[in-house]
Amino acid sequence: MTTIDVRSVTKEYTIRSGFRSTTLRAVDDVSFTLEPGRTIALVGQSGSGKSTLAKLIMRLERPTTGEIRVDDVAFRGRAGLDYRKHVQMVFQDPFASLNPFHTIAHHLDRPLALHFPTLTTAQRRRRVLDLLERVRLTPAETFADRHPHELSGGQRQRAAIARALAPRPGILVADEPVSMLDVSIRLGVLNLLGRLQREEDLGVLYITHDLATARHFSDEIMVMYHGQVIERGPADDVILRPRQEYTRRLAAAAPNPERRLAELRGEPS
Image (cartoon, rainbow, N blue to C red):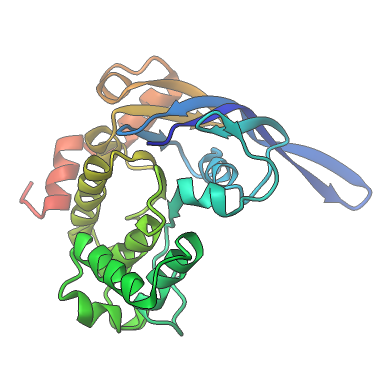
Protein backbone atom coordinates (compact mmCIF):
# COMPACT_ATOMS: atom_id res chain seq x y z
CA MET A 1 0.00 0.00 0.00
CA THR A 2 1.23 3.45 -0.95
CA THR A 3 0.60 6.92 0.47
CA ILE A 4 1.60 10.07 -1.36
CA ASP A 5 2.13 13.40 0.41
CA VAL A 6 2.15 16.64 -1.56
CA ARG A 7 3.72 19.21 0.75
CA SER A 8 3.50 22.95 0.06
CA VAL A 9 4.17 22.46 -3.64
CA THR A 10 4.51 25.53 -5.83
CA LYS A 11 5.33 25.67 -9.54
CA GLU A 12 6.36 28.91 -11.24
CA TYR A 13 7.14 29.53 -14.90
CA THR A 14 9.08 32.47 -16.29
CA ILE A 15 7.43 33.99 -19.35
CA ARG A 16 9.65 36.19 -21.48
CA SER A 17 8.42 38.74 -24.00
CA GLY A 18 11.23 40.72 -25.61
CA PHE A 19 13.34 42.22 -22.83
CA ARG A 20 10.65 41.76 -20.20
CA SER A 21 9.79 38.69 -18.18
CA THR A 22 6.96 37.83 -15.84
CA THR A 23 6.40 34.97 -13.44
CA LEU A 24 3.35 32.75 -13.70
CA ARG A 25 2.50 30.75 -10.60
CA ALA A 26 0.63 27.75 -12.01
CA VAL A 27 0.45 25.86 -8.70
CA ASP A 28 0.46 27.84 -5.48
CA ASP A 29 1.32 26.17 -2.17
CA VAL A 30 -0.76 23.01 -2.58
CA SER A 31 -0.72 20.29 0.08
CA PHE A 32 -2.71 17.08 0.44
CA THR A 33 -2.32 13.42 1.31
CA LEU A 34 -3.70 10.58 -0.81
CA GLU A 35 -4.03 7.31 1.05
CA PRO A 36 -4.70 3.75 -0.16
CA GLY A 37 -8.31 3.01 -1.04
CA ARG A 38 -9.27 6.69 -1.36
CA THR A 39 -10.23 8.77 -4.37
CA ILE A 40 -9.68 12.51 -4.42
CA ALA A 41 -11.25 14.49 -7.25
CA LEU A 42 -9.40 17.61 -8.37
CA VAL A 43 -11.83 19.95 -10.12
CA GLY A 44 -11.59 23.39 -11.67
CA GLN A 45 -11.86 25.19 -14.96
CA SER A 46 -9.23 25.01 -17.68
CA GLY A 47 -6.08 26.84 -16.61
CA SER A 48 -6.73 26.37 -12.90
CA GLY A 49 -3.54 24.31 -12.43
CA LYS A 50 -4.97 20.77 -12.38
CA SER A 51 -2.82 19.31 -15.15
CA THR A 52 0.30 21.11 -13.92
CA LEU A 53 -0.20 19.52 -10.52
CA ALA A 54 -0.59 16.13 -12.22
CA LYS A 55 2.72 16.66 -14.04
CA LEU A 56 4.40 17.52 -10.74
CA ILE A 57 3.06 14.38 -9.10
CA MET A 58 4.26 12.32 -12.05
CA ARG A 59 7.67 14.03 -11.86
CA LEU A 60 7.30 15.27 -15.43
CA GLU A 61 7.91 18.72 -13.97
CA ARG A 62 9.95 19.76 -10.93
CA PRO A 63 8.32 21.87 -8.23
CA THR A 64 9.77 25.30 -7.68
CA THR A 65 9.33 24.81 -3.94
CA GLY A 66 7.87 22.08 -1.76
CA GLU A 67 8.23 18.34 -2.08
CA ILE A 68 6.34 15.17 -2.93
CA ARG A 69 6.89 12.15 -0.71
CA VAL A 70 5.87 8.56 -1.34
CA ASP A 71 5.62 6.46 1.81
CA ASP A 72 7.57 9.24 3.56
CA VAL A 73 10.44 9.08 1.05
CA ALA A 74 11.23 12.32 -0.78
CA PHE A 75 11.89 12.00 -4.51
CA ARG A 76 13.82 14.76 -6.24
CA GLY A 77 14.52 15.43 -9.90
CA ARG A 78 13.07 13.32 -12.65
CA ALA A 79 11.23 10.15 -11.71
CA GLY A 80 13.10 6.88 -11.89
CA LEU A 81 11.86 3.32 -12.00
CA ASP A 82 11.37 3.18 -8.24
CA TYR A 83 9.00 6.14 -8.30
CA ARG A 84 7.16 4.87 -11.38
CA LYS A 85 6.58 1.55 -9.65
CA HIS A 86 4.55 3.40 -7.03
CA VAL A 87 2.84 6.09 -9.12
CA GLN A 88 1.28 5.64 -12.56
CA MET A 89 -0.90 7.80 -14.77
CA VAL A 90 -3.85 7.33 -17.11
CA PHE A 91 -3.68 10.11 -19.67
CA GLN A 92 -6.58 12.06 -21.11
CA ASP A 93 -6.14 11.05 -24.73
CA PRO A 94 -6.06 7.30 -25.44
CA PHE A 95 -5.44 8.09 -29.11
CA ALA A 96 -2.10 9.73 -28.32
CA SER A 97 -0.94 7.73 -25.29
CA LEU A 98 -0.45 4.44 -27.18
CA ASN A 99 2.20 4.04 -29.89
CA PRO A 100 0.39 3.07 -33.12
CA PHE A 101 3.35 1.00 -34.33
CA HIS A 102 3.25 -1.48 -31.42
CA THR A 103 0.74 -4.10 -30.35
CA ILE A 104 -1.25 -3.83 -27.15
CA ALA A 105 0.83 -6.73 -25.79
CA HIS A 106 4.01 -4.71 -26.37
CA HIS A 107 2.60 -1.74 -24.45
CA LEU A 108 1.90 -3.95 -21.43
CA ASP A 109 5.01 -6.11 -21.73
CA ARG A 110 7.43 -3.18 -21.64
CA PRO A 111 6.63 -1.98 -18.08
CA LEU A 112 6.63 -5.61 -16.92
CA ALA A 113 10.12 -6.12 -18.35
CA LEU A 114 11.35 -2.88 -16.74
CA HIS A 115 9.87 -3.40 -13.29
CA PHE A 116 10.07 -7.20 -13.02
CA PRO A 117 13.31 -8.14 -14.83
CA THR A 118 13.37 -11.67 -13.39
CA LEU A 119 10.16 -12.68 -15.16
CA THR A 120 10.54 -14.92 -18.18
CA THR A 121 8.96 -14.07 -21.52
CA ALA A 122 6.25 -16.67 -20.91
CA GLN A 123 5.52 -15.29 -17.45
CA ARG A 124 5.22 -11.76 -18.81
CA ARG A 125 2.86 -12.97 -21.53
CA ARG A 126 0.64 -14.55 -18.91
CA ARG A 127 0.58 -11.29 -16.94
CA VAL A 128 -0.26 -9.35 -20.09
CA LEU A 129 -3.28 -11.58 -20.67
CA ASP A 130 -4.29 -11.32 -17.01
CA LEU A 131 -4.18 -7.51 -17.22
CA LEU A 132 -6.32 -7.47 -20.34
CA GLU A 133 -8.86 -9.72 -18.68
CA ARG A 134 -8.95 -7.45 -15.63
CA VAL A 135 -9.91 -4.47 -17.79
CA ARG A 136 -12.50 -6.56 -19.66
CA LEU A 137 -10.67 -6.73 -22.99
CA THR A 138 -11.59 -10.29 -23.86
CA PRO A 139 -10.72 -12.62 -25.41
CA ALA A 140 -7.35 -11.41 -24.14
CA GLU A 141 -5.32 -13.32 -26.73
CA THR A 142 -7.16 -11.50 -29.51
CA PHE A 143 -6.73 -8.01 -28.02
CA ALA A 144 -3.09 -8.62 -27.10
CA ASP A 145 -2.03 -8.92 -30.71
CA ARG A 146 -4.03 -5.97 -32.02
CA HIS A 147 -2.65 -2.50 -32.67
CA PRO A 148 -4.22 0.61 -31.13
CA HIS A 149 -5.95 1.67 -34.35
CA GLU A 150 -7.86 -1.62 -34.30
CA LEU A 151 -9.54 -0.71 -31.00
CA SER A 152 -12.32 1.72 -30.21
CA GLY A 153 -11.64 4.76 -28.04
CA GLY A 154 -13.01 3.06 -24.95
CA GLN A 155 -11.01 -0.09 -25.62
CA ARG A 156 -7.85 1.98 -26.07
CA GLN A 157 -8.42 3.67 -22.72
CA ARG A 158 -8.93 0.27 -21.08
CA ALA A 159 -5.62 -0.85 -22.59
CA ALA A 160 -3.99 2.32 -21.21
CA ILE A 161 -5.41 1.53 -17.76
CA ALA A 162 -4.01 -2.01 -18.02
CA ARG A 163 -0.60 -0.57 -18.87
CA ALA A 164 -0.74 1.73 -15.85
CA LEU A 165 -1.56 -1.26 -13.62
CA ALA A 166 1.32 -3.38 -14.97
CA PRO A 167 3.94 -2.21 -12.39
CA ARG A 168 1.37 -2.77 -9.61
CA PRO A 169 1.35 0.85 -8.43
CA GLY A 170 -0.26 2.10 -5.25
CA ILE A 171 -1.24 5.50 -6.69
CA LEU A 172 -3.08 6.16 -9.94
CA VAL A 173 -3.36 9.66 -11.42
CA ALA A 174 -6.30 9.78 -13.84
CA ASP A 175 -6.20 13.04 -15.81
CA GLU A 176 -9.62 13.59 -17.42
CA PRO A 177 -9.67 9.86 -18.31
CA VAL A 178 -13.03 9.89 -20.11
CA SER A 179 -13.27 13.39 -21.58
CA MET A 180 -12.11 12.20 -25.03
CA LEU A 181 -14.55 9.28 -25.12
CA ASP A 182 -18.10 9.04 -26.40
CA VAL A 183 -20.69 9.75 -23.74
CA SER A 184 -22.13 6.26 -24.13
CA ILE A 185 -18.94 4.55 -22.91
CA ARG A 186 -17.71 6.99 -20.26
CA LEU A 187 -19.57 5.43 -17.36
CA GLY A 188 -18.19 1.97 -18.17
CA VAL A 189 -14.61 3.25 -18.00
CA LEU A 190 -15.28 5.13 -14.75
CA ASN A 191 -16.91 2.05 -13.22
CA LEU A 192 -13.86 0.04 -14.27
CA LEU A 193 -11.56 2.49 -12.49
CA GLY A 194 -13.75 2.31 -9.40
CA ARG A 195 -13.70 -1.48 -9.37
CA LEU A 196 -9.93 -1.65 -9.85
CA GLN A 197 -9.43 0.91 -7.09
CA ARG A 198 -11.38 -1.25 -4.66
CA GLU A 199 -9.70 -4.48 -5.72
CA GLU A 200 -6.16 -3.06 -5.64
CA ASP A 201 -6.72 -0.69 -2.70
CA LEU A 202 -5.41 2.10 -4.93
CA GLY A 203 -5.19 5.75 -4.08
CA VAL A 204 -6.69 7.60 -7.07
CA LEU A 205 -6.34 11.26 -7.97
CA TYR A 206 -9.23 11.87 -10.38
CA ILE A 207 -8.75 15.10 -12.33
CA THR A 208 -11.92 16.32 -13.97
CA HIS A 209 -14.14 19.28 -14.73
CA ASP A 210 -17.26 17.10 -14.42
CA LEU A 211 -18.73 17.75 -10.97
CA ALA A 212 -21.34 15.00 -11.32
CA THR A 213 -18.77 12.24 -11.76
CA ALA A 214 -16.48 13.88 -9.19
CA ARG A 215 -19.26 13.61 -6.61
CA HIS A 216 -20.25 10.09 -7.63
CA PHE A 217 -16.80 8.51 -7.80
CA SER A 218 -14.78 10.39 -5.17
CA ASP A 219 -14.47 10.40 -1.41
CA GLU A 220 -13.12 13.94 -1.31
CA ILE A 221 -13.13 16.91 -3.69
CA MET A 222 -10.50 19.63 -3.98
CA VAL A 223 -11.40 22.74 -5.98
CA MET A 224 -8.56 24.58 -7.72
CA TYR A 225 -8.66 28.22 -8.77
CA HIS A 226 -5.66 30.14 -10.11
CA GLY A 227 -3.28 27.46 -8.86
CA GLN A 228 -4.66 27.30 -5.32
CA VAL A 229 -6.88 24.74 -3.63
CA ILE A 230 -9.62 27.06 -2.40
CA GLU A 231 -12.04 24.45 -1.08
CA ARG A 232 -11.87 20.81 -0.08
CA GLY A 233 -13.91 18.31 1.84
CA PRO A 234 -16.17 15.27 1.52
CA ALA A 235 -17.64 15.08 -1.97
CA ASP A 236 -21.27 15.66 -0.97
CA ASP A 237 -20.37 18.61 1.25
CA VAL A 238 -18.39 20.41 -1.45
CA ILE A 239 -21.07 19.92 -4.12
CA LEU A 240 -24.20 20.41 -2.00
CA ARG A 241 -22.90 22.92 0.55
CA PRO A 242 -20.06 24.87 -1.12
CA ARG A 243 -18.42 27.58 0.98
CA GLN A 244 -16.62 29.48 -1.78
CA GLU A 245 -18.36 31.62 -4.38
CA TYR A 246 -16.23 30.08 -7.15
CA THR A 247 -17.36 26.58 -6.13
CA ARG A 248 -20.98 27.74 -6.10
CA ARG A 249 -20.56 29.09 -9.63
CA LEU A 250 -19.01 25.82 -10.78
CA ALA A 251 -21.87 23.85 -9.25
CA ALA A 252 -24.47 26.19 -10.73
CA ALA A 253 -22.94 25.92 -14.21
CA ALA A 254 -22.74 22.12 -14.09
CA PRO A 255 -25.61 19.89 -15.28
CA ASN A 256 -27.86 18.42 -12.61
CA PRO A 257 -25.77 15.55 -11.13
CA GLU A 258 -28.57 12.98 -11.27
CA ARG A 259 -29.48 13.96 -14.83
CA ARG A 260 -25.79 13.90 -15.79
CA LEU A 261 -25.35 10.36 -14.44
CA ALA A 262 -28.54 9.31 -16.21
CA GLU A 263 -27.07 10.66 -19.45
CA LEU A 264 -23.89 8.63 -18.90
CA ARG A 265 -25.98 5.52 -18.27
CA GLY A 266 -27.96 6.17 -21.46
CA GLU A 267 -31.20 6.59 -19.55
CA PRO A 268 -33.96 8.99 -20.67
CA SER A 269 -34.04 12.23 -18.71
